[in-house]
Image (cartoon, rainbow, N blue to C red; front, side, top):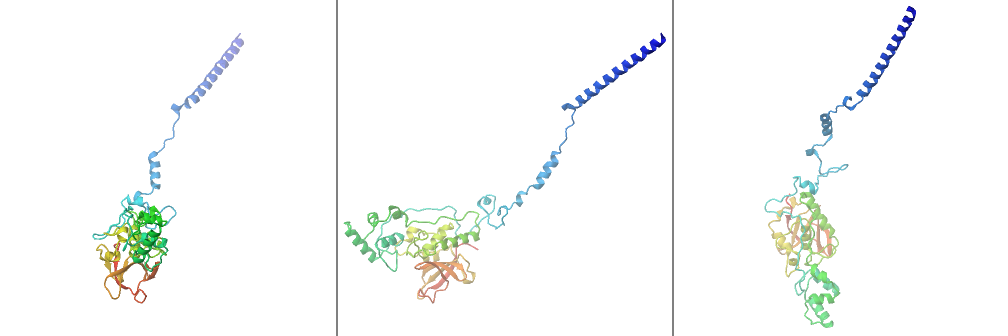
Length: 338
């Protein structure tokens, strides 16, 4: 009997031990599931302040941005127009000088009749249409008036020797040219941020675009159309935003204009000596026997100038005393302050 009770006790002990082990195993599983819930997972903390600091250290300070150069290009010192809005200055004329303007202008008044004494491109076009050949092309004087008179008579028109729009069209010339040939103003090619060097560069580049353009007295047309000495200078001035007082293309074609003299007398162009001469300065000439200015050119440097004089716009020497023109230098004037 005792042996039987002992065996029963051992069996009961083993059953209890197995129950304890099974319950402990389930508790471990529950702990693992509980640990995996979002409330119990530890998130990795991020130091956002240190990340922002590292980011800022790679940014270029605003006051160190090189506005004058793009990536991979050398800074030339020329500032684009949007940089001017940041307060970067361009050329500012001293008091008493012409301050460039930065908007191109146009003008009306080109639909004038042609008669004795009128000059310019419209006269030149009439002379070419009539197949005339004179040493002074562009000047409406007696031979031109007579040729117009004959043309009108042959066409059954009332002969007046004056070219109006009807006579102009009868010569095969366009109505548009009638209104615009004598009113051309070169567009402004500088900006508010342009430095003095840039303005002079544009001034000279515009003049060089006229190389080979016919000399036409009283004309101030586009490159290739025709200009005279002061007409060339006038258009180059327009390209850098300078509109000389009292001068314009229509006035330039009127009787007895001498705009080179008006430019010489203009107090906003400042006189300089030959020793001070710089590219872009104006060179004025007179005849050896007189004191009045009769010619103007643009100085290029190295004793060379660009001018409308010998049939076409060309580059010539500064001194002309020994040339057939027999011009003597009257003086020099500066357009843009240095």
